[in-house]
Length: 169
Length: 106
Image 1 (spheres, one colour):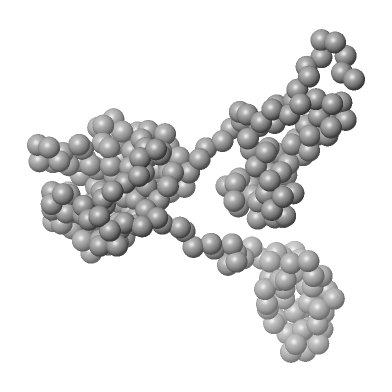
Image 2: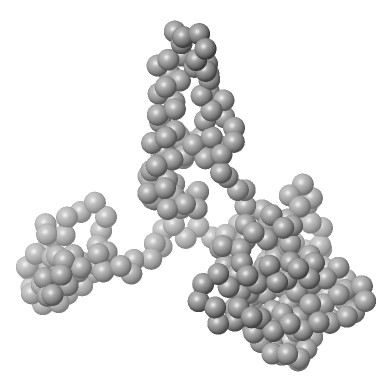
């Protein structure tokens, strides 16, 4: 029982609600959820920790959860014109555009950006496995230790590229 | 209504600039009066913050729409909150004049 005078509710911010929804309901990992919410992975983990703490507090001490507030920003809707090929957004969210703001044609569709989450750019040297023997390189596969992998060319164990670079120095 | 168009040069025959924050010139076109104002972009060679600074410049001209090839992620939310419409037109070969003609046809 909460003592008299103590606040009886916790305020779960909207970004904290969203992080719980993405991580625990949609079962995304922190990297994916961070991309959806357009924040960095460490920031997402921080929001997640805060959200868990608040929910735990509500559960254990019997407080009600009020979802409101927080630092959030909703992306506006994007549309594509079939005639001139331009993309445009609608800053006035309650209004649905009827014609293209550029060429005036009525042939517009909702624009859904292609999900590029499958093609993650790996340019950091840490994401490349390299063979110290022959120099063979390949993309690192997440959740696999590269030193357990064998080089298909010469058979020696692979190493992360930045570890190799560090050794060279 | 005023429309900002990013341009690579200071005439209407110049081609569209595909960048917003670091475009060479802004052409401010007034659809009601047909008036054209050409502003050089002071943030053309800025290392950082070119986008927000350019937003400030065009917002001070009270434009309601911006036509450019691309908008950076920093300014999308900024333009959203200022209620300025973004039009992404990826046609680097089109001239500013042709864009103005398209706007006039409406």
